[in-house]
Length: 148
Image 1 (cartoon, helix red, strand yellow):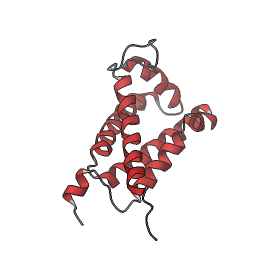
Image 2 (cartoon, helix red, strand yellow):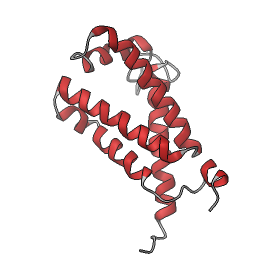
Image 3 (cartoon, rainbow, N blue to C red):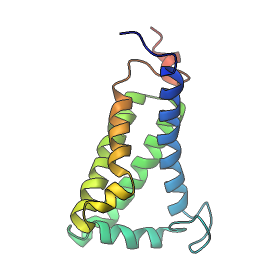
Image 4 (cartoon, rainbow, N blue to C red):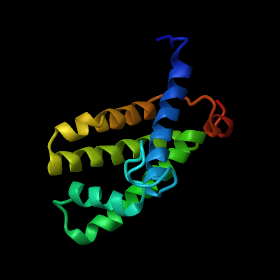
């Protein structure tokens, strides 16, 4: 099957959109984008992020919430950077898909199916898994390292 002429730009766009989405959320919860209550700021600091994390993971033992929130934030930051620069893109995409699928399941358990659907969490997960199936990644470090 011949690839469309839009294949490479679409793949680059998908990689960048996923990466920037993750990095934006990490920057927001670390307070780098502004403080809580400002326009377009969801959390503004770790404490406000943890309020939502506790609600989302309310079905888990409380002692697990903070470590899982830290792991999720590290995952989003690391996967975001890896996707942005295209380093081990397939691994980052699979990790990203698994992480967002875990978010979607947690959101569904704690708040109902409308929450992950409304925030397009299943879409981000599916897009990540789709990115992992691509045969190559243009404009990436992978392309430089693993030249075919």
